[in-house]
Amino acid sequence: MDRVLSSKAETGVQGLDDVLSGGFTRRHVFLLEGSPGTGKTTIALQFLIEGEKLGERCLYISLSESDEELRDCAQSHGMEIGDGIEIFELVPPESLLDADQQQSLLYSSDLELGETTKLIFEAFERLKPQRVVIDSLSEIRLLAQSSLRYRRQILALKHFFSRSDATVLLLDDMTSENFDKTVHSVVHGVIHLEQLVPDYGSERRRLRVIKYRGQSFRGGYHDFIIKTGGVKVFPRLRAIEHRTSFERITLSSGLPEFDGLLGGGIERGSSTLLIGPAGTGKSLFALQFVNAAVQRGEKAAIFVFDEELGLLYARTKSMGIDLEKLHDAGLIHIEQLDAAELSPGEFAQRVRDRVSTYDAKTVVIDSINGYQASMPEENALILHMHELLQYLNRQGANTFLTVAQHGLVGDMKSPVDVTYLADSVILLRYFEALGKVRRAVSVIKKRTGPHEDTIREFKISGKGLTLGEPLSGFQGVLRGVPNFVGERQPLLPLTDEDGDHS
Image 1: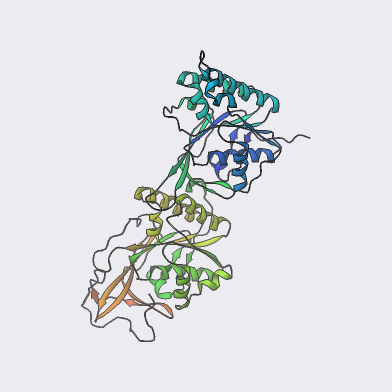
Image 2: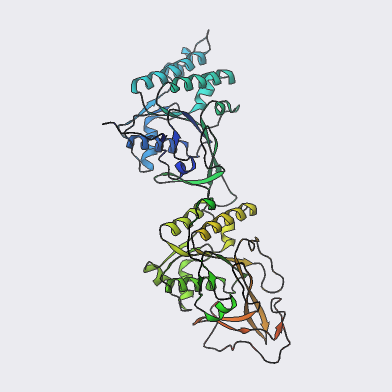
């Protein structure tokens, strides 16, 4: 009994079918273009191997790579080219490589192009495959020698395949000096692959669907990687597609004084930005919410860009939060990220996976400074962060972001302004009083309800965070050098046993 196939030919590439709204429309010709090294051959092999899994006959027509090279490529990814895939090598006969055998009265390209087309048609008629890959068009373009002959050749291929039930994928490495977009107007759809090389770090790859007749698709650029197992695409996140319903309750931080400063706590499904100079305790405030979430029986995910995990474990354990124990117990997911090796799309996908599969209700990104390093364009960072925060909010997750400002006291600047994206903004500051460097915290924004407009001192010790009474007797705390104008001193006592654990 023949298996009933869907109207779309799935690509076998994780994430690409999402971009293409299901895959390639069957019985049409598509173009996959990109410079050498962008992953065209790997995607083509995955496309055919997926067809073989569905019981389809598949044909790989190679004008540039040998059978052995293709099988080695598949093997390097842990893939196997089975009996359902035939590799047909189209290489020039040895006589054409002999200078004495070259045609003198006729252009050799006239014979070679016609012979090449004839061999392609014969291989197809013999196998009658349902999936075909032709690699690559650059060879046909060179044989054609002119744009007109090349266009006629592509049209001939299209009309030939249109009379069959085959889904055809044409590969083009764009290496011709006179590269034109003739084939764009002929084929049913076009996917363009790019490889970007930053000043530092590994290369970045992305793709874009330029054209897809009669079919909606996910537009814009989508990051992808090539790793063992093949190509993996990270579809561009659109938060509007991921709306869920949940109860918007107020969640406690676990510190009554901090909750008071926040007007009771943080609302479910909101984002919070912790901003201040290095060492003020931004990460610790975020981890305070993680600890409170675990106490409520919820899971949390922490993404660390700037700090080595071993140091973070040791530092937080001395303050009463044993992250390593929580991680080993499966209560939190914690991951150290390398901004030089990570694309923004891959990072967004990792966060999504933690929320959708791990059911994390608290997400910490520490810090935006590290995240920005993976995306030097500030405008792109803002757009990525907007979609990611909107997605997390709509999943009922609470997000905590940290941003380190330049400077220690006085006027400080942030490397990127994301304060307007967050629902709540918590400002941390150093200030000097009585010959000591102290820390202060204030809430300067909260969309979801009222909050204290005061400034509270806090200290970090082996007991964790301790918040004091509002600093009502001081002026200029946020500038770093306050003036005492009150009648009593509201500062927290600094004892030797508390120490400093920043």
